[in-house]
Length: 281
Image (tube, rainbow, N blue to C red; front, top):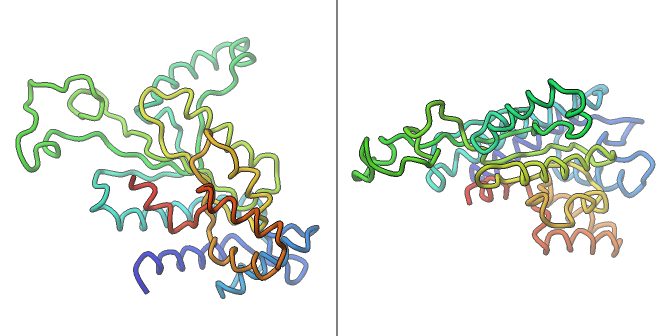
């Protein structure tokens, strides 16, 4: 087994054992108890992976937090394998504020003003998004820039780009990716990912980061509620897409099969193993 496949398998095993449990006997917690199709798809995915799930009940908040942590660990390891494709000094964190990053540092001042005024809070709300997982890249030192030949000197240009560490008194990382983790998509709160994406696009000073969603939701129709459409997110990534594809085709349900195929063929839904490569672009 290649290293990326091994990491994917380890990731799935951790999600199963730490964030998923059985309810009412044999119904996976990621399934909708009220939907026979959802239960069937979730059971099929778990059966294909062959990993044991957590023993005992896990409350939703705890399961979601574990899903975030496990996904962050996977991405750090998997993206690290591609360092030769996208070198740099990378940072990974959970629940990081976007105002800590170069494109959004101006929002910290705006937030202070909003918090100091009730009227502004009523009109403008909260501008600072805290994604579930953030990946940042530190600006370049002159030593890095000149590694192979002398490209810049201490007094020469470029003097304005924050990508050169020397130009900034307090260098901040650039937000490379904002990753929203949704273990399931059976709540209106899952649509918050769209709002977060739009805020990241509208409020930036600089390039737009990757804006993606990672989920374990078994129902294609619910995944479609986030995956379809353009502009606010890059793509949705499933923790076990290949297993979900097999599970969906086994049902023979043409409508559900078509829904899944539309998302995949339209580049709106991919597997978790695809995400490290997309981050390297």
